Length: 299
Image 1: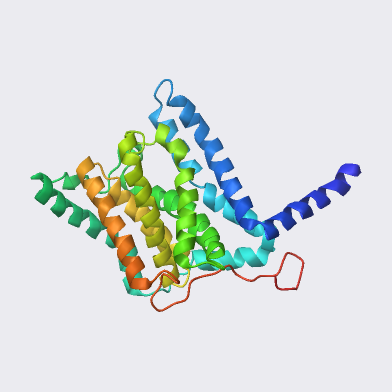
Image 2: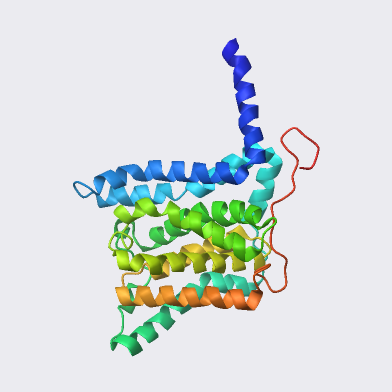
């Protein structure tokens, strides 16, 4: 009987904490979920090789931001808040040009990087390797693309841009919010440096460049998110297709050039859209004002 009385109190306490400190709880849950799921791959990386196990751990751990977003959203706002979040996850009426940015943009970046690589290094990258993966070669091409968009696109962006960014933008400029978010986004990747292909082979000298890529990538994604009126769908598709393009095994030079082009794109978006809203014709997307569970008041 005592346990039955205490449980609702504990649940109410957690719900109250979620309403008062949603970002703190979200970031804590993201790290806890993803790092625990990635732990077996980290341990395996120190012993015998198990590439498929590590790859599946990589995929599953990438759901941490999305899972955490739904958990904290449910605790803080209940079904009303979940419906609001899902409305942005499936917001598809955002204009043809943004669909082109999300679907075609990464392929254009790949081709531009190939041309630049040819000019700089004197030979063409392996263009036929576009869209393939060494880490997930056992999946096949189409299943890999689908998994990449679902796990790395939606798995990350429902949390990073769908949940965290609007709350960080409340009371801050869009640029400041994107920069703060990039710090958590970068820190979240730390275990991947021990087992994920691409990051595992990265030397210490390349880490600053990777971090700057994360920072400017955060700005670029914030620009897309704000410019589309908060479409989690479009940033998820863009994130997934960009990962597919940049991780194609076409040579390290091409990946580095693509990273540089994304950095330039992010800086150009900042100059074009401005730091306050990171959108030329829209205001920044801020945290939704929703009633608490079981409460008709607007928080």
